[in-house]
Image (cartoon, rainbow, N blue to C red; front, side, top):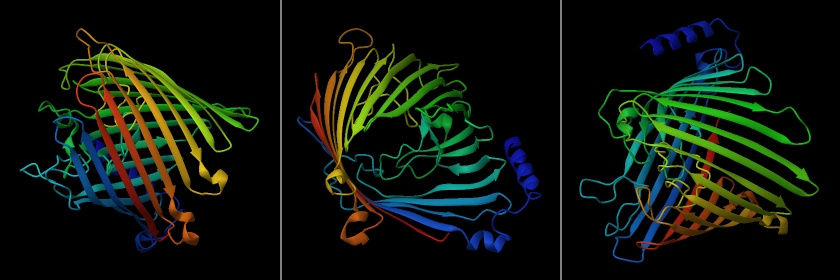
Length: 410
């Protein structure tokens, strides 16, 4: 309640500031923007053995409205829907859709966002249901619908070369859920209602010969977890080649009553890459500590392939990705990637897990360049993964994404 009172006070203070956009409430709403992203997705997984295959064919998306700014204040609301489009109920639900009481494919329509926002003095303050983008608590937009959160967020860029962010998150909305739950419930606990508090600082180095930044994040949720994350991004050009190096370090430890279980682990690694004349090559390495990583709200693990990721206890993971932008040969908007990853963990003992390897094929096509721009706003992506396990069943995974974006107003 004190949080809400403080935010209301900030809004009242804002009313005394000079008008920078809309001049009255009528202009605030009439000059707003309506945007939407319509999605049709297919996800399917085929197992080599007796495990029941998975399949979701779903149509939906998100529609959002943002008012114009009045004395720095604006409002936003979004609705999202995911609807079954004749998925095979003889196969298990994949996760694009919810399942009904019988385990069959179901549909969902829900409130995704509803917030009030203020922008003053190079600071954005947002309160309410909103989509959030931090390394280990984010929209995690890899399904038909993305994750969302309730709480307070602050992003500040007052000082040159610095960026600060802070979050006080109380509730969580998963990919296919129909309603928010408390952050405590999101970790499977009925304990005290504890928020997730997040702080971040980023510094961009003021140099011309290379682009370089470093950022640090701290996460704290009482009786659940402390997490720290550090990342540097270094990039530059040597002749016609673009080079990049991204080292990362992450550590987490359960605290208090261990609502999410007991763990104490870390991960370090890097991504290094080079691009030239449309071709790109990236290599990845990750080393994980004594326990499996706990990342239920989105993640920035060093290696994230279509299925497998660097997350298992005492695991060494390696990956290489090769890509090509076909605009270099006249096919604008078309990109292709092949990624190969190996995940090698302990074979015996307390931290033993199933080793695996994965090959991903990824084709992406922005259709704005097709038919003289007639399909502007459409994009198509097709992904196929082959997963081999040392123990258990091998399987393949197919994902097809068709999207259409448009906006009205502003």
